[in-house]
Length: 118
Image (tube, rainbow, N blue to C red; front, side, top):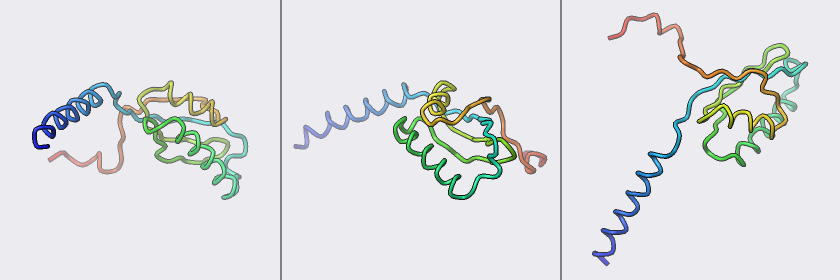
């Protein structure tokens, strides 16, 4: 049994290494969704929308992740992690939510960005 463990371990490590090399890195995207009356949606309507989105995400798999969204006026701004814009568009099509604009996030800043680096 001791001799079998070494080849099996080597095989598992090789598979994990190959997967790590082929899995595309996740990038962060900002999606603008124009939805008339979005800001007036009730908590129940927002919950239903979130459940619909989550259902599609489950089908699409772990390569796409919904981080959070902001509801403002007639728009919803969503932050997603995904390997490509195409996967974001696929989620939009399958969920029935528009993706009017999709932008790759190049940087995130906040008040601490003003502090000198140490």
